[in-house]
Image 1: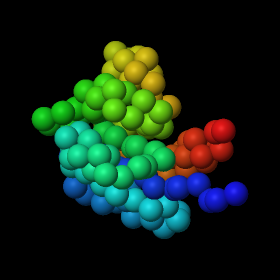
Image 2 (image 1 turned 90 degrees about the vertical axis):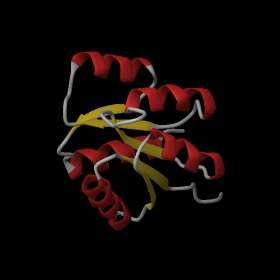
Image 3 (image 1 turned 120 degrees about the vertical axis):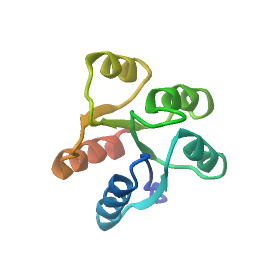
Amino acid sequence: MAEKLRRILVVDDEENARIALSKILTREGYEVASAGNGYEALNYLRGKEVELIITDINMPEMNGLAFLRELNRSHPASNVIMITAHGEVESYIEAMNLGAFEYINKPVKVDELKKIITKIFRKP
């Protein structure tokens, strides 16, 4: 049986956060791509497949929830982890109703993130 793709797309308008998260995931052995906003991410996804998308909620141009809505139209089976520095009950409920796998607060706790990713990659 072929090894499953382990490509993760990190979407965050904060460059330092995007780079830091990408480095952590790369060290964990994943192939990581990144995008600065939802439009860039959707563009990337036109030509590539990813197994997991980690996206910030609060971004200019297209926020994470709008991105998730678009993602549901074009890539409905995507695994998505939403991250935010401004955890609000309303955005949590909307994200989960839109099919996000998990919703976590910034600063991201690496051990928590690793557990969530492991759970996603163990799904059938």
